[in-house]
Amino acid sequence: MPAGAADPSSIGRAPYEGERSVGQLFAEATADLSALVHDEIALAKAEIRQDVKRGVSGGVSLTVAGVVALAAVPMLSAAAAFGLHALGITLGWSFLIVAGVYLLLAVVLGLLALRSFKKIEPPRRTIEGAQATADVLKNARPRPATQEEIDRGLGRRP
Image 1 (cartoon, rainbow, N blue to C red):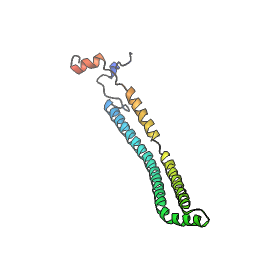
Image 2 (image 1 turned 60 degrees about the vertical axis):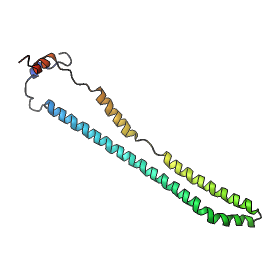
Image 3 (image 1 turned 90 degrees about the vertical axis):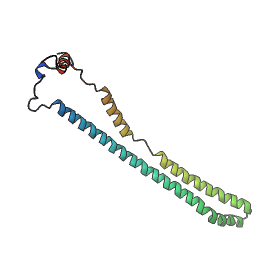
Image 4 (image 1 turned 30 degrees about the vertical axis):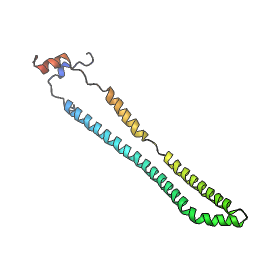
């Protein structure tokens, strides 16, 4: 029998016991596709939730770096500069050295925050699953109707 041709004995007959009708098959395929989409959405949410946690961690590190840099500069700078001045360094150079140390600390904390942000990744499993689903659906083709089915649908044949 050529591909795409209907079995003549199946025209107009009820499905045998255990067989499913076209409507049942279509309903099952629709339910399966819906479940697949829901599962992919759940996977995307889970992956994005992990990335949001990493982003929050990096944001907290960056905030702490800013607070440390701003709060520590006025108080400890003066004490450290005067301590260096007591060791024999002129007062101007003492303040410049202390300011450089605090800027270095801020840079280190900023790099730690940047490292946390770089750990954020795209939801690869979700993208792969969606692409696989799209490939399956792209290649799915309906079976062309046979001439007998067309004639029967148009009422040309009993």
